[in-house]
Image (cartoon, rainbow, N blue to C red; front, side, top):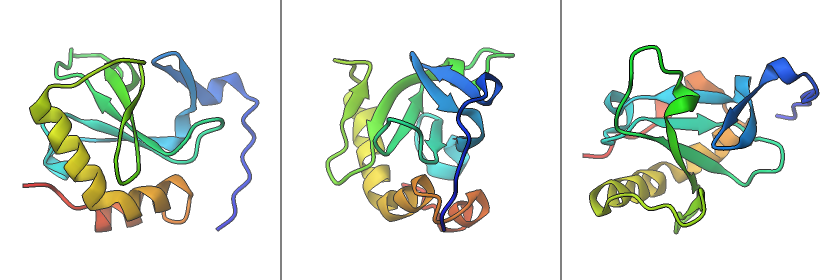
Length: 130
């Protein structure tokens, strides 16, 4: 599936941890969908970024936008790593869950990132960790 996007309109972008993201390419998934202790933002291909998911902070203040809850960017690969912010860490328990979940869903996450499947298809294949 080949898709061409016009990334020139400022209204089409949000800033997450200092990085510009195409707003229509970021979807929020809660713990009930993933089994994680934290919510995640799952992205389609973004300009100048490697495949990643965004892990949210624990606390959610009412009225807070999902992009304001972002804590770290984690790569989608066999050995995920935190790439933003530099030097950031999660608790061992949270990190272990995130790594396990990314490995379990790596193929689907990469298909989603590369626009090979849409959100509905991704929702059908996503696996929760237990």
